[in-house]
Image (cartoon, rainbow, N blue to C red):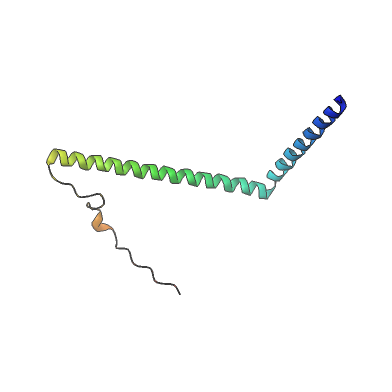
Length: 100
């Protein structure tokens, strides 16, 4: 019975080592390296996108705080967000042509 147990342990260890070795060899090929690089670029792009969203949210929050502060101190109503001095500079969006 002991021999059968150790034979099973050896088979399991051999299969595990074989899979690990083949995975390591696959990652060392140009296709494997490209896959790893692609995953890293996707992760970086996601991180940059979430950072940009957090920055925009912080900017909007701070802008609202400043509007509230101006209204409180001057008793004047500040223009709504997006309708300030930069609104006149924004070009009007053109409708896209229907592609057919």
